[in-house]
Length: 151
Image 1: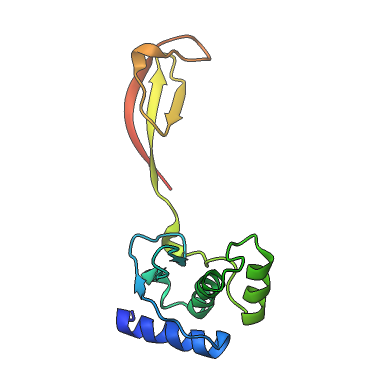
Image 2 (image 1 turned 180 degrees about the vertical axis):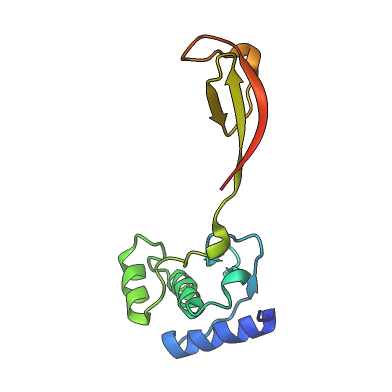
């Protein structure tokens, strides 16, 4: 895991070597980023990166991607993903188009189990009031059984 100072220096170095332009704002880690590699903040021109991706070999590609947003926005060119300027510059510097999937990003969610009097089972992600619903197969009332863990 790299420090914020090492990240700032790395972003400056990537900016000079791939874009021939200086990065004059702040690069930092944001632990709230879970599925994205990084983001460019339009108002402050700062870059935020996902710290869990800093050890991946694709991290330089993520830095390039965010720097494409940064340099195009500073130059008043098309900095959004759909813009031709963005697509061309990203391809020229060989930046990552998408953040890599993390292996531990598999979501675990819970299911609620309900059973009618005739033993028909229903699984739901949200709980519901059993007085308001009946089984579609037999018309009997539901009984709440409990929580079932699901991957």
